Length: 307
Ligand SMILES: [Zn+2]
Image (tube, rainbow, N blue to C red):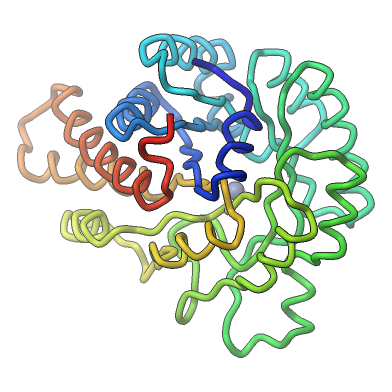
């Protein structure tokens, strides 16, 4: 059943658990995400980036998600635009039938970010669609980084309070030290949990963690042992994810883990069965591996059994 993002996240915010927001770029990934939610009996957010929409076509994104949400009608699911870059892009998603959009103007100065976010919120709310925005810049932080340097890139709790009050945004992604991709930390993983707790206290809305893939050991092993190269990439450990949820995170974006799990199995198939050319035989082990990653994650996040 397709619902708004805030419907799923306000429950998570009240009860103190996290909901995974999983990216998809094709039918195999989308179908697997839904099947995993069914196994875990978990509410779900599926998200498409502007790149994914360009690749699939807006009509295909919508028809695939509608079909899958009908097939799993008891799973509450929100369709979210990941990292919308402009008002027009968010409007297009709202008009097409997305139930949640992110406007990412975090690279702009505070005032411009606020104005653009407010413009998107006003339009989206008039159509009953929820909105996510981002404050601060996504990048890893290290032990030897000074307080001033941290303040320059991470979210400012005062600003977060004003931003939410003025824009009326539904949920906020505060930069607390995560980054996108497989290479998240130079040294030991480190997130600014104190800052997170302060932002939660000041805003009292669902918060979002971007760049939250964990790169589980089995996924890493398959990827590396089949000839992949992760260049020393490190994910966000599960206990960091659990601590983030305790600190107020309710939406956790996961993309890299799914890609690595899928590609590792495709590569394994290609290595082990060089004469195989049935696409389904490549994709099926990939889908099974992705499903296992998602089901496990839903238990870590606490969303399993919450439908
Ligand atoms: Zn992101």
